[in-house]
Image (cartoon, rainbow, N blue to C red; front, side, top):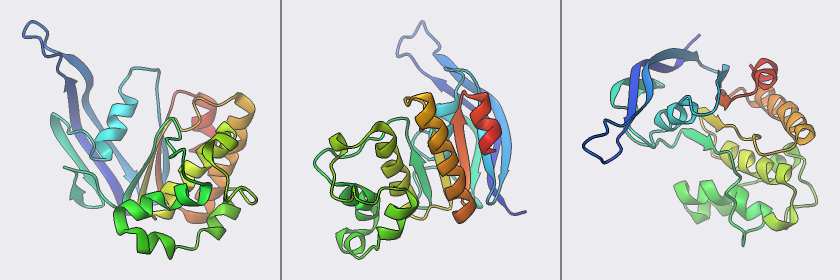
Length: 206
């Protein structure tokens, strides 16, 4: 299979700003490969550097040492073909579901491209029919997170990074969204890297 991600001896230290403190070592000589269209989970306890690794893959923060290659190119900055879903939904409260779904495309490709986008199929895929004109405060936590995932998918990323997207949800909602995420992946077959501290979630999805 084609290699989508290559991480080689990556190290990251967060400096404290104090000359007496050498900083906090978040990751040390981490390496792994992810094949194209593979669904991989990064599993570990809180504070072990999972989210840091994901942000380096997204090009948001640099690695101190080592090399990160995505789709054959070294990562030095954010890329249009990499999507990132955070732990919280971060939807704009004054925008409807449709407007929030279009937001990522609007930022990267312009408002004209966003308005021309047919988002009805994505609304159906996410199970949000009837809520197209609803605002975030009118949605449940699970529905808001579905909008966030749809927002990332509409940008058609080759690589989708997910940073504990269901960590703040109750167990029943989390299980439901895990099954929906699995269904979406089976339909679209994107390369996905999921950060989680849940062993059952990692086993189910990967």
